[in-house]
Length: 402
Ligand SMILES: Cc1cc2nc3c(=O)[nH]c(=O)nc-3n(C[C@H](O)[C@H](O)[C@H](O)COP(=O)(O)OP(=O)(O)OC[C@H]3O[C@@H](n4cnc5c(N)ncnc54)[C@H](O)[C@@H]3O)c2cc1C
Image (cartoon, rainbow, N blue to C red; front, side, top):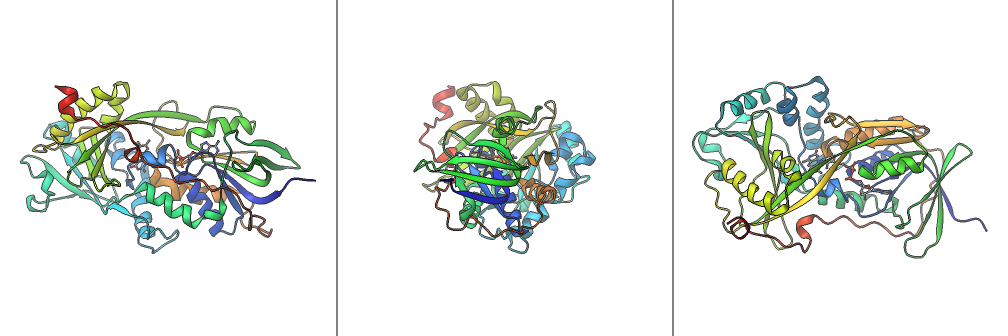
C-alpha cells in the first residue's frame, strides 16, 4: 500500500519569524503551503531577540548611512500599520513592549558626533526631548535623550499569534529529520509522525529554507553546494527585579554601547534584555565576568540607577545570516537554486519584506490544486520559551563581583 501523500506548491522548513511570515504570505496569495518545524517555533534567534522594529539607526551609526540600508527605513511604518490592524498580516493582537524607543548618548565628543550622524538620513528620526519630557530613569544632567518611533514587540507573542492563525499548516518533524528526493521534477520529502511513527510524503514544487542556523545542513540534504551561512555570536545579559521600563539604545561614537528592552516574566517581574556592544564584547567572557562588566556598564549609561537588588543572568545566542565573509549583511537574502530558496531575513524587522520577496520567486504564484492538507492529523510544534522563563540560577553582582 502506498503511504499517505500530500501535494503542496511550497514547503517551508523552519518556523521562526521568517518561516511564519512566509507561510502566511503564501496562504494570503493563494499558494498552497505547509511548514515543518523540528523543535519549537522561534527556537534560536526569534525567541532570543529583543523585538525592536529597527528603522536603520544602528546602520546609520555603524555605517554612516550606507545606501543599502535604505530598505530598513521602511520597516517601522510597515509594521506600525500591521500592528494597528490596518494592513496585512493583521498583527493587532501582538503585544507591544513599547510604542517607541529612547536613544541617549553619553558625554564624550565622539558620542555626540555619532548622535548627530544618526539624525541625518533616517525616515524615523530621533526627536530630541526637553528635560521635562525625559523618562524618569534618565534625568541626569549632561545627557541628550531622544525618542525614536521604533516599536518594540514581544517576540514570543508574535510567534503565538502566528501559531494560532496558521495551526493547520504547522507540522512537527521527528528528531531523525526528513528524507529528501527529487522525483519527476518535484521535491519529495518523507517524514515520520513524531508520536505514532506513521510515514507521510509531501510533494512540493518549491522548498523554502528559513531554518536559521539549520539552513546549512538542510542545503546539504537538498544536494546544494557552497557555503550559505555565517554565524555571529552574542552573549546577552538579563537583569530582573524592580526595574524601570527601558526600551532603547545608548550610543557612544560609532557604537550602540547597550541596547535595553524590557519584558515581564510569569511572576510579574520586570526583565531587561541587554544587548548592543556589551553582548558583542561578552562573547569571549565567562558569564560571571560579563555580569560584573554589565553591572558597571549599566551604571555608566544610566547614572543614578540602583541595581543593588537586581538579579543577573546571561545567555548565548547566534545570529545566522547569509555568508558575507563575516561582514554585517544589511538586507534580506534569498538564494534560489533548483526550486530551493535559502532565506535569511537578517533582522526580525525584515521578515515581512523577506516573505513578500520569496513568494515572488516561487514557480507557482497561486495554486491550481485543491488542498490535500485538510483533515491531516499531525503533532503541532509548541512555541519556544524565552530564557528568562527557564529554571536557570540568577546571580547578583554584589555576590559575584566583590
Ligand atoms: C540576541 C538577538 C537579538 C536580536 N534582536 C533583534 C531585534 O531587536 N530586532 C531585529 O529586527 N532583529 C533582531 N535579531 C535578529 C533576529 O532575531 C533574526 O534575524 C530573526 O529572528 C531570524 O529569524 P529566522 O526565522 O530566520 O530564524 P530563527 O528564529 O532562528 O528560526 C529558525 C527556525 O527553524 C527551525 N529549524 C532549524 N532547523 C530545522 C530543520 N532542519 N527542520 C525544520 N525546522 C528547523 C528552528 O527550530 C527555528 O524554529 C536579534 C538576534 C539575536 C540573536
